[in-house]
Amino acid sequence: MAMNMTGYEQQILKKMQEEQRCPVCALLEDLEFVILCHLQYDVSNNEDVRTAIVTAGGFCEFHFRRFRKLANSRTNALLLMALIRQYCEHDDDFQAHCRVCERITFDEVRLLEALDSLLPRNDFRTVYEQGPGLCLCHMQKAQRATGSVEYRSWLGQCQITQMTNILPLLQQMVDRSYFDTTRDQRITIPYSVEKFVGRKALGL
Image (cartoon, rainbow, N blue to C red; front, side, top):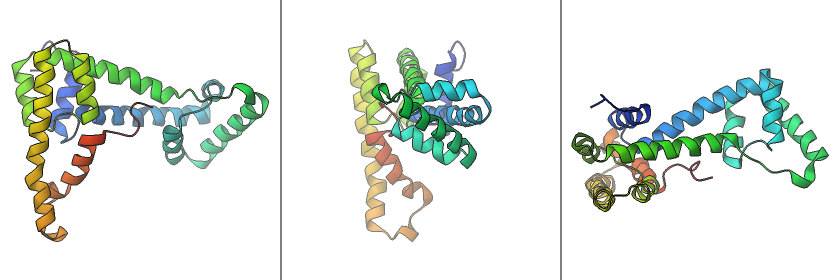
């Protein structure tokens, strides 16, 4: 199926086959980690990047906390000192314009466009039906992005089928002790939660 596919399309298909979760959420989570890894290095070693981040007001609340956990104390101190100075000198118009959110939003749009271009392919729809599908947030965005009434309806029906398929596994969690359930049964709970809410970082 990979022939004549764009990079984004290939990423979606690969992630669907690798992980039992929303492929868009999973890809954006990978991207977020890579961005934050690069940023924590640049904040420590590249004054121009650090100045650009500070001038933009740092990060949103979610990515600021993520950055703090990933970066070492020196990197956090460098960023916070620069932010404090920026605020004290320019407090009237101090607002955060998170570059992590901007990049993730850009890639989210590209991924949803790639998904839309894959929908006419019968082989892709077969893989999609047999996999975890999208979280509710991305399914609804995919429905809005497609110009096809047929595919909009198909995405909605797949979502119902995929959610219905979770019910027996959840029922086993109700009927059995935690220690009598398998790993596949236990991961049903976080999978079900993500199916409804996606990832917190999205839409910030």
